[in-house]
Image (cartoon, chains in turn brown, blue):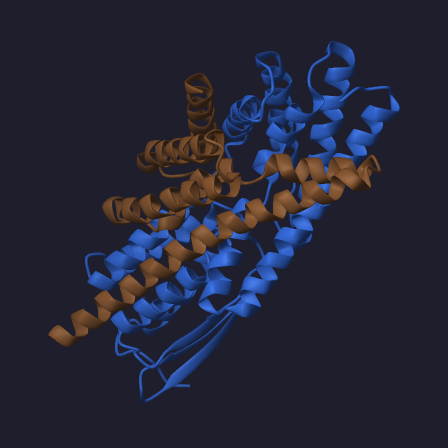
Length: 152
Length: 259
């Protein structure tokens, strides 16, 4: 299990770094993006390897990535999307999308449906985690600005 | 039509419109574009302003309380450039705080608007390496990393030559899908390897990740129009990608390739 996790960590780290270069991310944030992506993915993998639901893994992993990109955004003083976007990429169910399409094209309709469902559920887990963190931080922002105004 | 702002009327209006437009053109979400515009309006002395940002256009009204002026700006190109987003954000923040002069701010935004020389080779190399990493990530053998890198490299190189308008956005995905799966098919037929991980890894740069992210963010905020539009665009891109890949895949299977 440790070997798998290490491989996952390295691969997602490297992939995220070069992905960030591809989208012209500012240098100072690239390492951080890659790091949280790799850690988030390891969390997701570990949860899955422990026998728990893989969707729970994606959810928690994505939660981690989202929270730390918001925190990182405050630290680096940049829009959170800059840190978040490269780190998101390993979580996108590329395998699921491909498999769904593959089974469809090869007319394996009985395998297509489960693959599609798995893809959609993965996407949903990721989206819900993103949404939760997004809502939390925007409520926090609203609260901060209301407090500022009330202090004047 | 009188002047809106006490001083530097035309320049302030230009900066506000330019900042908002550039955010959308560089991959920012609609919330960020609207917030940027509103912050600048307030900082320049036009508190009665409002804006609706959509992926395809910007509609803003700058109002000082005595007068107001409306602008409609069409967004024609959309690409992802995170450094530009950072610079626009920094510039608008500094303009609002007053630490950046109007002339400097205008200069910075104009420079961003003109665009940088496209570093195609560097992008293609980055795409290649990240494709290789993703291939191994998706369970490919080390041997598969090389074809994946090549596919990613050429795909990025060729797709980068297509200009970025809305019309081309999902055409790019489709073309990328065909190129990637086609090249992968040729390589695997000649040299062997695992077709699936190679193609998936090489395709990751084309998957509409940022679009989906922005769509989700917009929908949560209640921006159903822009959220729905961006979601549709992502679906179109994903479908086009799938169609492209299925062409290469069919070619591969027809020539006796084994997945």
